Amino acid sequence: MTIETGLRDKLAGTAAVSALVESRIYPLFVPQESPMPALAYQRISGRPTYSHDGDAGLGWARIQITCQAESYQEAKAVAAAVRTALTGASGVWDDTTVDAAFVENDRDGWADAREAPVVRLDVTVWYQE
Image (tube, rainbow, N blue to C red; front, side, top):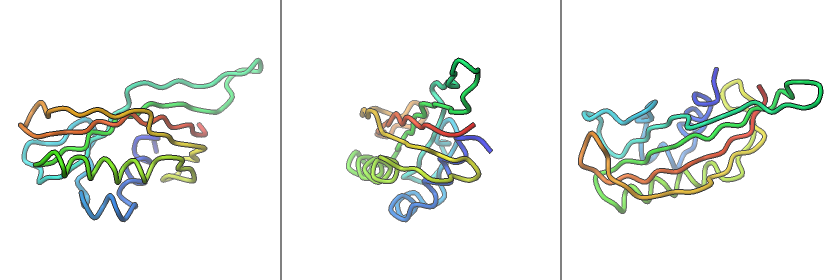
């Protein structure tokens, strides 16, 4: 599996997140026909880590999570649940060992494909490759 699918499974398995979005967690974008609220995730950047001996087996990824809802308050509530679920998180996500995850920033916005408020969070994840 990938770190992206591991992150999706981590969010889906977090009670506070799934209480809000149920199983509406999508790669890349929230489909127009999806009920709200919903999440989308995508890798923004990433890189392996090297030592003098070569690949250190430690991966780093920045993943953007888009929290989309019918109202601004609902989008903020979903973002808060995601932040709580991921800040300082570690463990095995799917079959990937995650050393640490941190929400680095968030920003408010507007959905491109559907007129709806969004909160986008950038999450840095350190994991074993």
